[in-house]
Amino acid sequence: MSKRSDDDAHLVETKIASELAFAGKLLEVRSDKVRLPNGGTGTREFVVHPGAALVVPVLEDGRFVLERQYRYPVRRVMLEFPAGKIDAGESSLATAQRELREEAGYAATTWKALGTIHPEIGYSTEFIDVFEATGLTEVGQALDDGEFLEIVTMTEDELLFTFDCGGFTDGKSVAALFAWRRQHRRKNA
Amino acid sequence: MSKRSDDDAHLVETKIASELAFAGKLLEVRSDKVRLPNGGTGTREFVVHPGAALVVPVLEDGRFVLERQYRYPVRRVMLEFPAGKIDAGESSLATAQRELREEAGYAATTWKALGTIHPEIGYSTEFIDVFEATGLTEVGQALDDGEFLEIVTMTEDELLFTFDCGGFTDGKSVAALFAWRRQHRRKNA
Image (cartoon, rainbow over all chains, first blue to last red; front, side, top):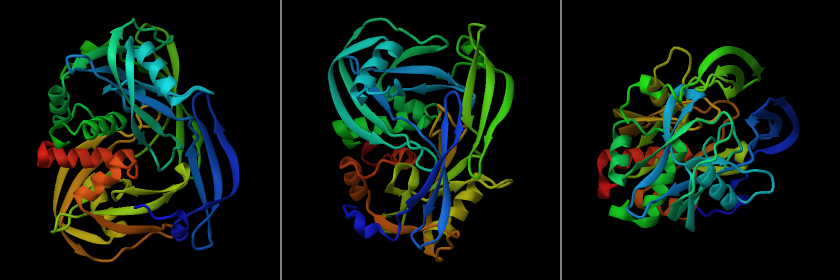
């Protein structure tokens, strides 16, 4: 899988023109005209996203810190790791540290990068940098106005059981758990 | 995590009004005015998606069938499991069977549901039903006009190694691999 990109000319699409198709309060959509690998043209519409950071916070006793938050697009309360959008000029590590503090109410002494996930490659530019946070101390939440969420702590076995039962379906959080388990090679994850 | 929804009144947002904010060639965005848990109001913008199906195709020798496809929003060739949007009136299993045949060029005798993933709960209604397909036979691809992709087969160890090296970052596919490993409890995944 380490092919050089010039080997992929039969797959790559290149930009011919780009226009802002929609600018809402939250979402920005661009519509690009592209050159296809066979020389033809196509249209690609996608959400422009600044990128995000996600934190896998692990307490000293091994429990994860997670959030329960109502996610309007899927009309349900979702179980997820703390995460949020990168602010302009912010590093993804700084985002992770800010979101852990503001949303979950924890500070951490030790941060470790666990890799990057692309959550929606069909129609979003979003990437999510994933970090593990350990050496946690409670500092109190500082939620944004209109942000409502509940903090829960779960052991790894409880979280895996919840996944197996269909109660942990947030793609970014599942991928992050997998990345964390790979890093720790716990039970040869 | 099996709380009844009426326990979650402190988290749930309810629809006050909804409008079509953008209708492009590919994407539809709605903007809803919502009642927040504290009685206030807010705006939620999100992509309306019909849902999708993803297939984890496993050959008789244990190799996975995957695709390499250029994904314009993230400007790179991505390694992913076959997947696609549910057509109107189609079951997600029928979508999975169609995508495996059209994109990857395989038919399967045995299908097993591995669960559901929500890839982008912040701004999309999309869900992805995940299936394992076994008993595979090659039937030849039938790609859509303007669809370019390459089929690769990889052992589980090769795919895990690729993940560990940062070459397998598609969120839906990573979550699907995790679901598949949990189902099989291979190496206590």
